[in-house]
Length: 395
Ligand code: AMP
Image (cartoon, rainbow, N blue to C red; front, side, top):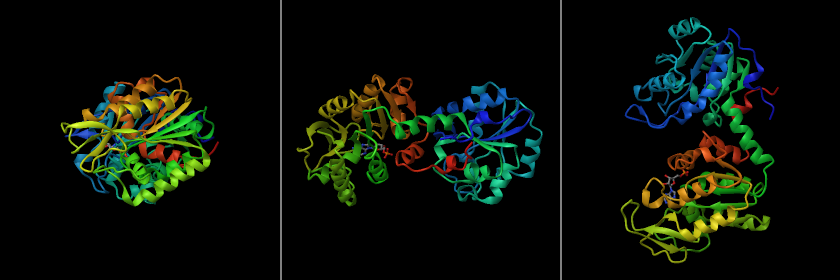
């Protein structure tokens, strides 16, 4: 990929509009995980060194096109000020860009930073509206896309605005695309994918595409239940997508025809209810009683996974191995995280819940790359071109 990058423009004395991904988890107005804000710092610091004024923008949650204080970016501006140790002026305006905001941006001097209000307070944002895109572009001389987490969407603040300003990829997006791009195009082999999480339906396209790229696929989490049922096993009360059994069968057949090993659980931790204190036991996949449900992988499965991974040189992981939010069903997910942390390979975590698990286990620093975008990294693995990246011109 040869897109315009942050370092390709001279920003001296200019204004630069940067799309960040500040879509952070919040509880009662307090940010519960600031990783996405931290991830934006390298691009911001680079720009500060270039003697330009910086206007940041992002969405937060789903306010559905109307202003709503619950989704205000004010807490983000405060956290960012703390991290940068400098003021980030919060341009709180229900219209995101108004005459008042334009006037304030005009006054910004090189070295100063401002943050716009949540771009999704405007209904045109998710429709890639032309007027809103132009309004945003009118604030600056350059545009930088540093929001990997929204790159799979074509919105005004990432795709629309790039049509009206000289545009570049930020350092974060570039890193994400470089690492994931290499894994997809030219991986060091053996290349193994681990897919888990709740639904097969979310990842059918990913599996189809990975069958052309990887040497092995390990399937865990509730996703595996549908594949096991497709093989004729009784899954009791487990989460199964009965309308996807044919697709699961078809994917297993395709893998066989291509000689790609698909590793499914051999044993599972089961309980009668999805409750942390529910009595649980580990059983073989052939022995699940009808009033039990699978909530994690068992030790034999974890051993088999470790054995399948031990020679791997590239590993991509997306989706937990069980209901990892509950301490009694997190052993499989944390076991995989620990094994990957100590593996001598390029290890890539595709955002979302597996990223949260690695963070919770304190292992993030031992993973080659933890993506900031679950949906976007899944689309890359699916072989799709991301609109937010495509919109930036080639060099
Ligand atoms: P996803 O968003 O598709 O990555 O799915 C993540 C969710 O899958 C997490 O909230 C997990 O609790 C859930 N999950 C993983 N394994 C299971 C399982 N065996 N049964 C029910 N939910 C599961």
